[in-house]
Image (cartoon, rainbow, N blue to C red; front, top):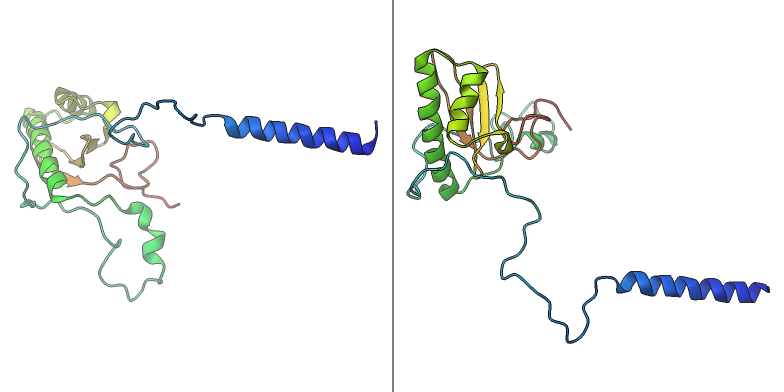
Amino acid sequence: MSLTTRLRQSAAAAALLALTVTACGTEHPGQQQAQSPFPRPSFTPRPKCAQPAEAPPNQASSSPTASTTGTPQQGNNEDRPPNYADNHAYRMSAELSPAKRAKGEASAALIQYELEKARTEGDVSKKRITTALEHLGCGQEHGVYIWKDFYSVHTGDVCVSGHVTEKELTIKVHGAYAEPQPGTGPCVENRGGH
Protein backbone atom coordinates (compact mmCIF):
# COMPACT_ATOMS: atom_id res chain seq x y z
CA MET A 1 0.00 0.00 0.00
CA SER A 2 1.43 3.32 -1.00
CA LEU A 3 2.00 6.27 1.26
CA THR A 4 -0.60 8.32 -0.63
CA THR A 5 -3.25 5.64 -0.14
CA ARG A 6 -2.53 5.41 3.59
CA LEU A 7 -2.75 9.19 3.94
CA ARG A 8 -6.09 9.25 2.10
CA GLN A 9 -7.46 6.46 4.30
CA SER A 10 -6.25 8.21 7.47
CA ALA A 11 -7.72 11.52 6.32
CA ALA A 12 -11.04 9.83 5.46
CA ALA A 13 -11.11 8.07 8.85
CA ALA A 14 -10.36 11.34 10.66
CA ALA A 15 -13.08 13.18 8.74
CA LEU A 16 -15.61 10.42 9.49
CA LEU A 17 -14.69 10.50 13.18
CA ALA A 18 -15.02 14.31 13.27
CA LEU A 19 -18.46 14.16 11.66
CA THR A 20 -19.60 11.45 14.04
CA VAL A 21 -18.42 13.26 17.15
CA THR A 22 -19.80 16.67 16.18
CA ALA A 23 -23.19 15.24 15.17
CA CYS A 24 -23.94 13.96 18.68
CA GLY A 25 -26.68 15.88 20.43
CA THR A 26 -27.51 18.18 17.55
CA GLU A 27 -31.04 19.29 16.77
CA HIS A 28 -32.58 18.19 13.50
CA PRO A 29 -34.91 20.44 11.45
CA GLY A 30 -38.59 19.81 12.12
CA GLN A 31 -37.92 17.96 15.37
CA GLN A 32 -39.69 19.36 18.46
CA GLN A 33 -37.43 19.96 21.44
CA ALA A 34 -39.00 19.90 24.90
CA GLN A 35 -37.98 23.03 26.75
CA SER A 36 -38.80 24.12 30.25
CA PRO A 37 -40.06 27.68 30.74
CA PHE A 38 -37.55 27.95 33.61
CA PRO A 39 -33.78 27.67 33.28
CA ARG A 40 -32.29 24.60 34.88
CA PRO A 41 -30.01 25.39 37.84
CA SER A 42 -26.38 24.37 37.50
CA PHE A 43 -26.43 23.10 41.09
CA THR A 44 -28.83 21.29 43.35
CA PRO A 45 -30.26 23.74 45.88
CA ARG A 46 -30.09 22.71 49.52
CA PRO A 47 -33.34 21.49 51.05
CA LYS A 48 -35.11 23.90 53.38
CA CYS A 49 -35.42 23.63 57.16
CA ALA A 50 -36.37 25.90 60.07
CA GLN A 51 -38.83 27.74 57.86
CA PRO A 52 -41.36 30.07 59.48
CA ALA A 53 -45.07 29.35 58.95
CA GLU A 54 -45.55 32.79 57.39
CA ALA A 55 -43.20 34.77 55.22
CA PRO A 56 -41.60 37.52 57.30
CA PRO A 57 -42.06 41.14 56.24
CA ASN A 58 -39.28 42.48 54.04
CA GLN A 59 -37.35 44.57 56.52
CA ALA A 60 -33.79 45.34 57.40
CA SER A 61 -32.28 43.57 60.36
CA SER A 62 -32.67 45.22 63.72
CA SER A 63 -30.65 42.68 65.66
CA PRO A 64 -26.86 42.48 65.89
CA THR A 65 -26.40 39.69 63.35
CA ALA A 66 -23.73 41.20 61.16
CA SER A 67 -22.40 39.22 58.24
CA THR A 68 -18.79 39.10 57.15
CA THR A 69 -19.23 40.65 53.72
CA GLY A 70 -17.41 43.25 51.71
CA THR A 71 -13.67 43.55 51.93
CA PRO A 72 -12.26 41.16 54.52
CA GLN A 73 -10.95 42.85 57.64
CA GLN A 74 -11.95 46.38 56.68
CA GLY A 75 -10.52 49.10 58.82
CA ASN A 76 -6.90 49.92 59.51
CA ASN A 77 -5.12 48.75 56.35
CA GLU A 78 -1.81 50.58 56.81
CA ASP A 79 0.13 47.42 57.76
CA ARG A 80 -1.47 45.18 55.12
CA PRO A 81 -0.10 44.36 51.70
CA PRO A 82 -2.11 45.58 48.69
CA ASN A 83 -3.32 42.04 47.87
CA TYR A 84 -4.59 41.31 51.41
CA ALA A 85 -8.27 41.32 50.37
CA ASP A 86 -7.60 38.97 47.44
CA ASN A 87 -5.70 36.56 49.67
CA HIS A 88 -8.50 36.48 52.24
CA ALA A 89 -11.51 36.34 49.89
CA TYR A 90 -12.02 32.67 50.79
CA ARG A 91 -13.19 33.83 54.22
CA MET A 92 -15.98 35.99 52.82
CA SER A 93 -19.59 34.92 53.09
CA ALA A 94 -22.25 35.64 50.50
CA GLU A 95 -24.12 38.92 50.84
CA LEU A 96 -27.77 38.71 51.85
CA SER A 97 -30.55 40.71 50.27
CA PRO A 98 -32.97 42.36 52.72
CA ALA A 99 -35.57 39.69 51.85
CA LYS A 100 -33.13 36.82 52.52
CA ARG A 101 -31.95 38.47 55.73
CA ALA A 102 -35.56 38.83 56.94
CA LYS A 103 -36.24 35.18 56.09
CA GLY A 104 -33.01 34.21 57.84
CA GLU A 105 -33.94 36.21 60.94
CA ALA A 106 -37.27 34.36 61.08
CA SER A 107 -35.48 31.00 60.77
CA ALA A 108 -32.97 32.11 63.41
CA ALA A 109 -35.83 32.88 65.81
CA LEU A 110 -37.10 29.30 65.42
CA ILE A 111 -33.62 27.89 65.96
CA GLN A 112 -33.07 30.18 68.94
CA TYR A 113 -36.33 28.97 70.52
CA GLU A 114 -35.31 25.30 70.20
CA LEU A 115 -31.75 25.87 71.43
CA GLU A 116 -32.97 28.02 74.31
CA LYS A 117 -35.12 25.09 75.48
CA ALA A 118 -32.02 22.86 75.50
CA ARG A 119 -30.00 25.52 77.32
CA THR A 120 -32.59 26.05 80.04
CA GLU A 121 -32.84 22.27 80.51
CA GLY A 122 -29.10 22.34 81.18
CA ASP A 123 -28.31 19.93 78.33
CA VAL A 124 -26.17 21.51 75.62
CA SER A 125 -24.56 18.27 74.51
CA LYS A 126 -23.98 17.58 70.83
CA LYS A 127 -26.77 15.00 70.92
CA ARG A 128 -29.28 17.47 72.42
CA ILE A 129 -28.37 20.28 70.00
CA THR A 130 -28.65 17.84 67.09
CA THR A 131 -32.10 16.79 68.36
CA ALA A 132 -33.20 20.43 68.68
CA LEU A 133 -32.18 21.15 65.09
CA GLU A 134 -33.77 17.93 63.84
CA HIS A 135 -37.03 19.05 65.48
CA LEU A 136 -37.00 21.89 62.92
CA GLY A 137 -36.23 19.50 60.06
CA CYS A 138 -32.51 20.37 59.96
CA GLY A 139 -30.20 17.41 59.41
CA GLN A 140 -26.92 16.57 57.70
CA GLU A 141 -28.35 17.48 54.29
CA HIS A 142 -28.59 21.05 55.62
CA GLY A 143 -24.92 21.28 56.47
CA VAL A 144 -25.52 20.93 60.21
CA TYR A 145 -22.19 21.11 61.98
CA ILE A 146 -21.70 20.96 65.74
CA TRP A 147 -18.30 21.18 67.43
CA LYS A 148 -17.89 21.81 71.14
CA ASP A 149 -20.25 24.75 71.81
CA PHE A 150 -20.41 25.90 68.16
CA TYR A 151 -23.29 25.04 65.84
CA SER A 152 -24.14 25.95 62.24
CA VAL A 153 -26.91 25.07 59.81
CA HIS A 154 -27.92 26.10 56.30
CA THR A 155 -31.68 26.65 56.20
CA GLY A 156 -31.81 26.46 52.41
CA ASP A 157 -31.72 30.26 52.26
CA VAL A 158 -29.10 31.45 54.76
CA CYS A 159 -26.64 30.23 57.35
CA VAL A 160 -27.50 30.40 61.03
CA SER A 161 -24.63 29.78 63.41
CA GLY A 162 -23.43 30.64 66.88
CA HIS A 163 -22.50 29.22 70.26
CA VAL A 164 -24.63 27.56 72.89
CA THR A 165 -23.51 26.94 76.46
CA GLU A 166 -25.41 26.55 79.72
CA LYS A 167 -24.81 30.27 80.39
CA GLU A 168 -25.48 31.85 76.98
CA LEU A 169 -26.79 31.43 73.45
CA THR A 170 -25.50 33.44 70.50
CA ILE A 171 -26.94 33.40 67.01
CA LYS A 172 -25.77 34.94 63.75
CA VAL A 173 -27.45 35.06 60.33
CA HIS A 174 -25.07 35.19 57.37
CA GLY A 175 -24.49 33.94 53.84
CA ALA A 176 -22.66 30.73 52.98
CA TYR A 177 -18.89 30.91 52.64
CA ALA A 178 -17.32 30.71 49.20
CA GLU A 179 -14.73 28.25 50.52
CA PRO A 180 -15.99 26.85 53.85
CA GLN A 181 -13.84 24.88 56.25
CA PRO A 182 -13.48 21.43 54.63
CA GLY A 183 -15.74 18.77 56.14
CA THR A 184 -18.01 21.17 57.98
CA GLY A 185 -20.77 22.38 55.65
CA PRO A 186 -21.25 25.75 53.93
CA CYS A 187 -21.62 27.84 57.08
CA VAL A 188 -18.24 27.46 58.78
CA GLU A 189 -15.54 30.01 58.01
CA ASN A 190 -12.38 28.47 56.60
CA ARG A 191 -9.54 28.85 59.11
CA GLY A 192 -6.84 27.86 56.65
CA GLY A 193 -5.92 29.30 53.32
CA HIS A 194 -6.10 28.40 49.70
